[in-house]
Length: 105
Length: 132
Image (cartoon, rainbow over all chains, first blue to last red; front, side, top):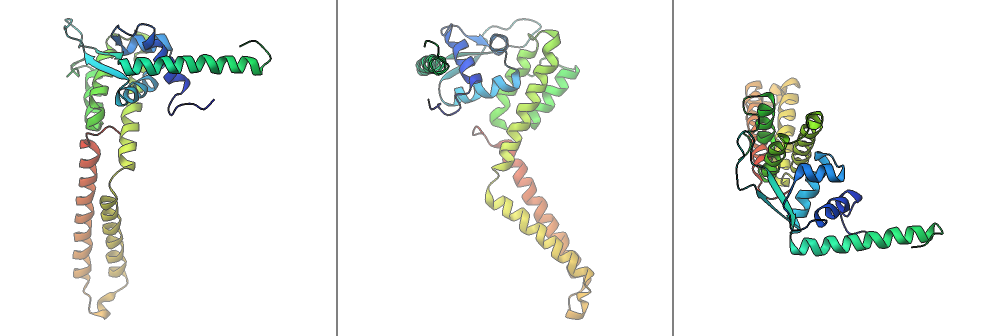
């Protein structure tokens, strides 16, 4: 199945992670820990998603003494819809691969 | 913004340098990554920081590749002119009524033009506000 532009495994992992709790604002480090992606891989993906309008970003409202405000991310409604499509497509891909290997989808 | 992370420490200095070296459009992301650094587990901090450097270098590389053709052509022409004037001064063109001083001044002028275009390119690279 043809992949969407930039829909790498890493992007899919980030989308899935964001989609798992799409209403909650997430920190970059949380996403990195959850997806296992390094910062140099994760942030370019976040930048691309934000540019496409799939992701919204903001700085923390309250300041915690001794540490800087953190940047927060969550999917936009459009992003959540696209992420859902990507997740479904991934399921289809995985099913097709299992069928090709002689298993059940 | 949040470049106060580790202010005064090595990380603070690296954060400031990375921010300065980064094109404007990507600076908020570099700030975000350094702000996150305080929450990263000790053992992973160097990995996290090297990710920031990777992103800055990638952003600069993309910008360098997209410098407008006019600026690139200006630099190339001025460099060629320097080369021609330098070669001309070595080829003893006095016989063709061209004085060495004129050639030297021409080379200097071309050097200045080339530097001017170089500065324009640097300004363009670091001030572009559209995302790369």
